[in-house]
Image 1: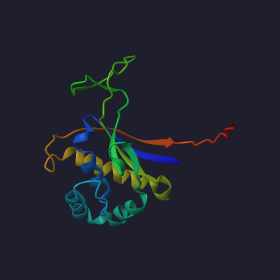
Image 2 (image 1 turned 45 degrees about the horizontal axis):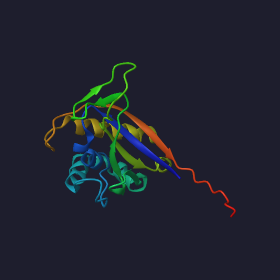
Image 3 (image 1 turned 45 degrees about the vertical axis):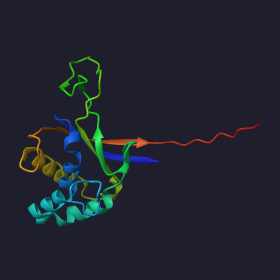
Image 4 (image 1 turned 30 degrees about the vertical axis):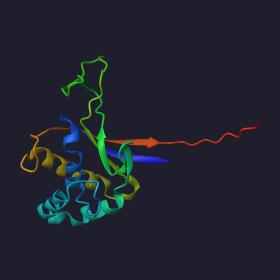
Length: 168
């Protein structure tokens, strides 16, 4: 089984906004675990020209177990490479060669079926970037301040199941 995750790395603890950012990026209706549906409505109203893009998310959005406590969801927080947490919620960039004592969860993962994007993947991802950066800069929709997008990446998780015959 293969799971593909679009990851958005930020400079802030992503547990404060992962569902809201996902809702703003996807505009996906009918996915209750994604976000406060008000953001879905707001992004669709703010971007009426992106109807085809938002419709595409209806087939692109997938599920993944980001945290076993919540089972399969469309989005979740993920660790951010090159960053550490002091164990008290303060995040900082690691120095070269330094090892992280505690993971830093500053990334948002969105489970996708990448093959469903089809032709126009570059344009689709450019729109993801546009909406993510728009959300990060706007502090009027949430209680946290502005944050910076550090980068985007794909993570592929592959689970291989093997069977071995047991003789008694």
